[in-house]
Length: 320
Image (tube, rainbow, N blue to C red; front, top):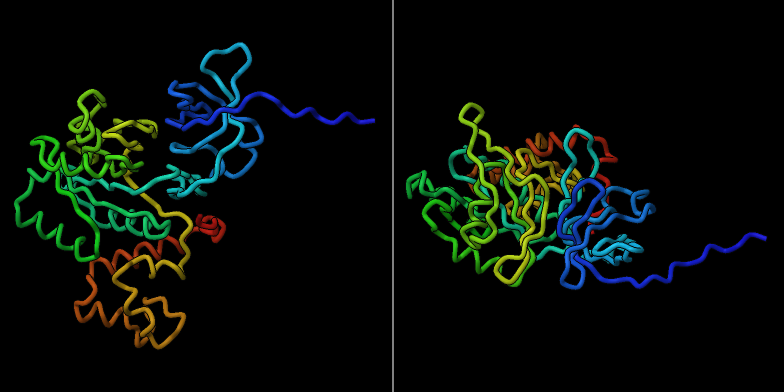
């Protein structure tokens, strides 16, 4: 007769995932930082089911080890921010249980890329997370140039914070946004995320880097995603992302994630209009009349073309 496998009766403790490095995890358990591994069966599932920064987990202590444990359960997530994994494809979960997303970009050095900002905004719309746009290095451009950038995104209903880590401008406003919240702080390499966090809390002493003079791209200074206690809340500091491919978005849903398109979506001649080459398209007419920014419309076309290039399986993951 086959014996039933005994269930573990080890005490399980609640923990918060602070950082991920390969298959190793730093987890805050009862005020201490434990080094943890994951129970094998968790790794048998999709990558999106693996623990990520911000996950609340149940941990069992390793026998005979201090501050070491096994993650055996991941609690239900209130939110999950993902992107398409570079090169290999599929979903790459970045952070869980988030209140909002601070998208930090430099207005110069490296060059400002509004199309990259659009990608972050579309992703936030898709997963129903509030984006806050942080325009850093404002000391490098004129007030008129800054106002033009700010006006474009504020017209979309996006909250914008203007900062200069060098001159300590906008740091208090940023600190207030972080207070008592779990915030993803993301953006391209060289945007100045680490410098801003050091301004908010000088004890962090995060490593900062310079922009490559040849490529115009920032160097990665944050190498792993990590959860940092800041201003009474937690900041999820992510490695610099030069290219951000949204995840879990279908061609049919994409137009709805461009907020300025929504008013016009019911006005096209064809119900399945994709707003590309169809006649009597209300969105294209709005672009021609200046009601929708041509730059944003081109961003939509570019992102739509990119989505088409990937297999249906890559983008069929259900959003939670």
